[in-house]
Image 1 (cartoon, rainbow, N blue to C red):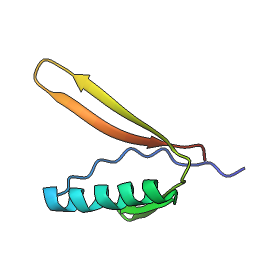
Image 2: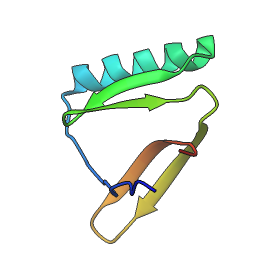
Image 3: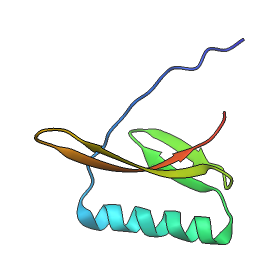
Length: 73
């Protein structure tokens, strides 16, 4: 059986780039279609039935808001 590598990547985008990606994602969700995105040399295909959630984390000096899509592989 083939082993999958664990991967945890963060990439910083300009505000304009981020807005474009969010618009493409929203359009895909509205149309009930899968979403494809290229991140650090790898293409990711998010299925149309991915679970969508929002996470918020707060520390003493930092807060974080994450829009997440999760799916089974």
